[in-house]
Image (tube, rainbow, N blue to C red; front, side):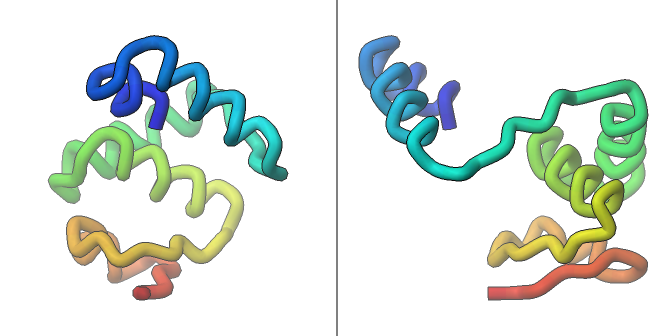
Length: 85
């Protein structure tokens, strides 16, 4: 979100978005070694974007259901919990 806002609207817009999101109960998860290695494996073998690979890796780590409408995740459907919207 930050990089898109920065790229398309500049630093002021990116900071506005960051501050707006900070008002919501959103947890930022640090990309530790294990999460990064799992994301790299998804990226290498499932042909998904790096950002999507991190989302999938975090869902796997937390044993959570990944909720998405992005068809790029179809390659991960087998063996991962995905709720399609």
